[in-house]
Structures are given as C-alpha cells and as structure tokens.
Image 1 (cartoon, rainbow, N blue to C red):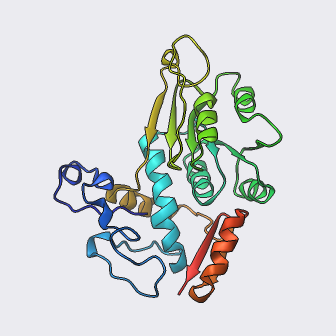
Image 2 (cartoon, one colour):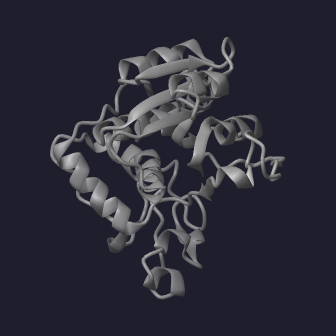
Image 3 (tube, rainbow, N blue to C red):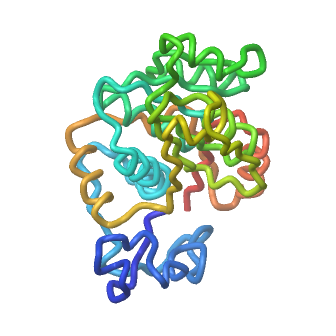
Amino acid sequence: MFAVGCGECYYCKIGKDNVCDRIAQGFGLERPGAYAEYSKAYARELFRLPSGIPYEAGSVVTASTGTVFHAIRLAKVMAGDTAVIYGAGCLGTQMLQLLKIFGVRVIVVDILKEKIELVKKLGADVVINSRETDPVKEVKALTEGRGADVAFEVIGLAQTMLQAIDSVRRGGKIVDVGSVMEPVSLKMMPFIDQGLSLSKEVTLMSVSHCSKADMTKLMEVLSIAKIDFESGTVKVSLDEINRGFEVKKEGKCARVLITP
C-alpha cells in the first residue's frame, strides 16, 4: 500500500513518511475502503497514472508495485547486479519486471508450476523450483560460488527468509519485503559461510510500504517503461468477493483484482 504520512512528525519531515508515527490512518487500517465501491482519499495521496496504464492497474501500482519499488531503491540495486527473489506472487512478479527494467539479472524461486511459468513469461533469467532443487546451492552455482548481490524475501515465511540470507554473497543485502510473521532463528557466529554471519558483512533490512517520494519516482518510471499488470491477475466483481478469496487461497495466481 502507499503510506500516507501525517506530514508533521519527525519521520515525515526527513522524507520517511512511509514509517510515519500515524501511518495507521491509511486505507484498510484506520480508514475503510478496501472492499467498497467508493471511498474517501486525501488530496496528498493521489497520483495521476501515466498514460497507457489502465485505471484498474492503479490499485496494483500503489500497493505491490510501489512496495517493491521502494525495496529496490532501499537496497540500492544497480545494473549488472544479480538479484534473487523468493516468491512469484503479487510482489515478486512486479519486482521481477522492475529489476529487469533496471538491467538486473534476476533469479526467481517458487514451488508452484503456474507461478513458475508466469515468471518465465515475464522475463526471469533463471527460475528455480525449490521443491525440486535446493535454491541456495543453485544460486551459488549460478554466481560462481559467491551468491547473489541481493536477495528479496516476498512471501513472509521463516524458511524462505533463511534461504534468502544464505543466498547472498559476502557483503550482500537481504531485504524482508514479505514481512515474516513467524520467529526466524539466525546464526550470528563469525567465520562461518552460512546464515547471517558477521564475517560475511551482510546487510539485513526490512521494508515498510512506499514513501511519497518513491511513488513520485515510480510514476516517472512507468511513464517510459512497460509493466505487465494483466498476466497472473484474476478479476472478480465486488459481488463475487468470496470467490475472489477462494481463488487467492489457492495461491496459483499472482493477484485477485476486485472491481466495483
């Protein structure tokens, strides 16, 4: 979601409005608006969609696209880097496309055939089925034994978080985008080559929504670069919302889009 800061607290004043003291005022938190035909919005949280982006895609832009764009900028990913994404859902598919726009080599890890085929279509350089192959070993093999420059966890599971940590090179970065909600046991001991090792000098960071500055920059990117918002999307009407929940629970699509 696009975080709407209060504009007055310390974090808003230093440009970190995505972690505003009053961030709970956003849609789906303090204010309703997720499953309604109409809802109110502050003028400061509105953005004009670039030409060519369908109106319905706006909900994807301000949620998953904005969040992963913020994650990419936070990690300072550069052209020529190798990134591994754990998860090929609504976040992973958008992140993949943005990274490719920025000239990054992208490895995607998932377990579902439908999502694996989807990210192949969207341009992933390598796709790993972690039910069949150890993703950490495969990422190392694909990077001359070093590991990826950055790993993004976009599912929210402890297992994939640990795999992400083990997948990066020394001095690499791990970004928790999926908001892991379960305990994660980290190995902090030095002089080991697995886990969050002090000797590896890795950076572990988390992501919270998307700032106004990020969203402004994202609109510039989308005005000149094409993102596929349709593939992997199942659309249902507001009256079919329960079916939408069932489809999403199956986990075979990237996202379910509810139209008024």
